[in-house]
Image (cartoon, rainbow, N blue to C red):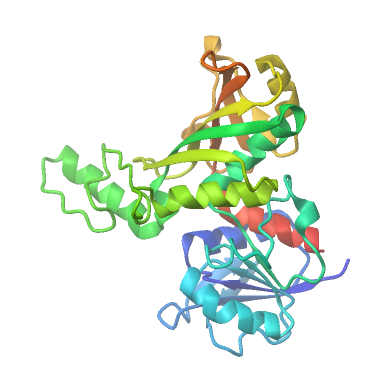
Length: 332
């Protein structure tokens, strides 16, 4: 099997470290693995199988002889270095928001729109974490009955904001239980024992950037530029895995039983749906796993053809690193 020289940009971050773990777990055919990060993180040593690899500083010359670069270092870094990598002949798969809405760059979820990946593309965008799990669940239902409107509420874990956010929640939890003063840093308010309807910045209409991402990215991935979508994104005090409450209205009839069958047959989905036995997805059950889990599948009684679903997935795996590596596997 052909081997590929792979670079991980942002290797010391939460997603970067997950890249490294999943590359190993899935036996991706790696010739050389180069780990890249900021000057501050350069010199750290990370394990890959039986090897210990020294993290190098990201520079303009980092991509010589690299076939595929996996980026997880933020939009500013991607905007600067992804074109440089592409010009050197490297195929870039970018986990940031930098290129997602560029009409000349594909936005890929392998189970949903692999046909959008063409050989001529040198930069490929990975979608927002909540968008990924939602479109995986929506795709088989859309194929069966055609979705005409989606109302989405997300409940997103603090790891979506990075390691410092997870550490802050842990510290605040201890402080709260010890009746100590809490001073937020990563979030505008206390996150421990709280929920914040605020992810990213607000626009002039009162929507957050995260909510707009979900709307625009879903339309692009599903190839439905006029699909009606509204979203509310909430940060919750959970360390990992995002949850999505999805209400879908359809043009054609679809029963909960038909939806369960379509979801069960779709790659990458596990249906956990027996509320009478308390069986439904939760962040604790789904954390560390690769699939998108769907439960609470039921009819929406307020419209002619509608369903409600509860969708849970590990945001660091399928919501970020795994989806990126699945794109690389398509490129193989």
